Image 1 (tube, rainbow, N blue to C red):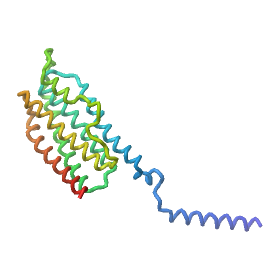
Image 2: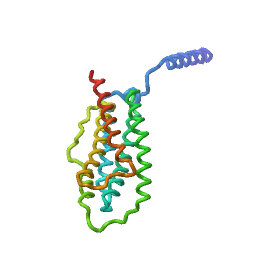
Image 3: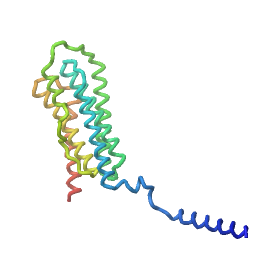
Length: 213
């Protein structure tokens, strides 16, 4: 009798193992990744990165030297863009979008090196007199009370929207410097950045249009 029970338990174990070996369902956490609530949370995470970065820039202490302040703000701005790309690429499944993101990342890295070198080589003392240009730069980074980029819940689409916003805001900072007649050139960085950002914005918009087609 005891032998029969052991045999039955042995056979039952084989049956369970066999069933498990053919179970191809993803774990609950992975299977639920496509749920609307999960997708919305991922998009919110992306937006939170930029919101946090904008707050960080708006609270930076000013040197009141417009060119130095521009470089300092832009360095933080780039840091936010890099974090955005890193987070978005965790969820991205589109190879074309990944290629654009990698290209943007590569140039952000290069530009950050230029910004760091400029900041180190130009150790301006803080000016006691406030600079209207520096103040205008800071106001341009003041967080809005209402979100300017509504989220769709589609992580890839929301990344594209947020990335375009980020690239355009970098170019807008250059326009602030231009309008004020301030020296905005940082070791050739600015002259190259603006058209490059425009190229990326066009590529991201083209990606969106193909998805809508």
